Each structure stands twice: as C-alpha cells, then as structure tokens.
Image (cartoon, rainbow, N blue to C red; front, side, top):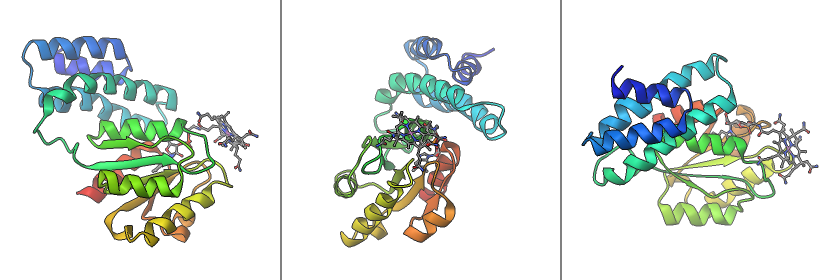
Length: 210
Ligand code: B12
C-alpha cells in the first residue's frame, strides 16, 4: 500500500495518531503538501461520505474520521501559503442565540474544513449582531446557522432579518440546519438552503461557491 493509500485508510478508520505520524513523515521526506491533502487525507474522507449517507457509518465514527483528517491538515496547512485549495473561501458558522447545542454544528465545521473551506466558528449562543459583524470582518461568502431547539429556531429568522437590514443579504448565502429545521422552515425565513446533515452541507457549500 502506498503512503497515500495508507494515509487515506487511517483517516477513514479515524486513527488520529497514525494520521499525525504518517503526515509528518511524508512532509519530512519532502512530500508535496497539496498531494498529501488531495491524494491522501481527502481521499480518506471521500470513503467516509457515501458510507455515512448509506447508513454504514454513524456520527461518532464520522467525527473520528473528521478529527483524524484535521490532525493531518494542521501539519500541512501552514506549508500551503499561496496554494489554492479553496481556503480563501470563508464560511461563518454558529449556533444561534439562546442555543447551546454544538455537536452537530461542530461536525459540520469539521466536514467543511475537510472540504478545504476556511471555517470561522463563532461557537454557541451567537447573537444576530455577532453574525453580522463576522460577515463584515471575514468577508464571508456563506453563513451557516444551527439550532436544535424549537424556541431558538426563531433566532435564525432574527439573524437573517438583521443581515437584510444591514444590507448584506446579497453578499452571502445562508444555510440553516439542526434537528428541528426543515426545508419549508428554511423557505419561510428566507434562507438559501437547508441541509439535513454535514455531508450535504459540504456539498451544497461547494456547489454555491463554484
Ligand atoms: C446532546 C443534547 C443536549 C446537550 C448538548 C451538548 C452539546 N454540546 O451540544 C445538552 C445536555 C447540553 C442539552 C441541553 C438542552 N437540551 Co438538548 N438535546 C441533545 C440531544 C440529545 C442530541 C443533539 C445532538 O447533538 N444530536 C447529534 C447531532 C450530530 O445532530 P444534529 O445536531 O441534528 O446535527 C446534524 C444536522 O442537524 C445538521 N446540522 C446541524 N447544525 C447545522 C448547521 C448548518 C448550517 C447545517 C447546514 C447543518 C446543520 O448536520 C449535523 C450533522 O450531520 C437532542 C435530541 C435529538 N435527538 O436531537 C436534545 C434536544 C435537542 N434538547 C432538548 C432540550 C429541551 C434541551 C434543554 C432545554 C434541556 C433543559 N431543560 O435544560 C437544554 C437546552 C440548553 C440550551 N439553551 O441550548 C430538546 C429540544 C426540544 C425542542 N422541541 O426544542 C431535544 C430535542 C431533546 C428532546 N427530545 O426533548 N441537550
């Protein structure tokens, strides 16, 4: 098995320590960082995606794979200055005001990062004003709103309304997600898209930015 295949397999199996070790070994041996990402790390995640969709892998396993991948990315990312892997495409994400649930949101962050996006994670209980400030500060192209409570879903609308009021609505695409959220709710509040899981969020973000 080549080092690339081995690396992909370690990501798929969620073996963060092995990913760290092998990535570092490949970098030390003069490996091309871009190739280490595209032919190794991301290949591993590409094995995970369809398995998760088909129900052959579950959330904890996907999180382990995403964590393993991010350990490898930490080593190669600093070497990529000037190379275009899409890291200039910035996504802002947060759990809306009043809501402290972040497991699903964190999964979306990891999967988005695995897709090469620069993700600014604002954390939980994020006010509409903070979302707006972050859009301006980071010149974001996509904003992701997460909510797990039927009560805090309303703050998704409040956030979108403030984004509109501040004249930023045309500058960003807004994705919403979280267990109680649905496509019809997304339509009602004026979001651009609803995603039921992290994998479709990455696919939708990629489609929007391309
Ligand atoms: C874990 C959990 C907690 C943990 C949260 C820990 C943490 N760090 O997140 C703790 C114990 C702290 C907690 C607290 C509370 N919880 Co709670 N919690 C849950 C539980 C069991 C699981 C949620 C979860 O993590 N799911 C797993 C993740 C992976 O799934 P997910 O979040 O849906 O995310 C996926 C998708 O939705 C999507 N997605 C998510 N976000 C986004 C964002 C974008 C942009 C996109 C595109 C996609 C996307 O992708 C994700 C990955 O595939 C749910 C039950 C449930 N079945 O949902 C209740 C649940 C959400 N909680 C509930 C309640 C009531 C509460 C509390 C009010 C309880 C209390 N009385 O104190 C508090 C609220 C605190 C607060 N202010 O937020 C209720 C909500 C009911 C309702 N109708 O609103 C639920 C449904 C349980 C229930 N059946 O009663 N909770």
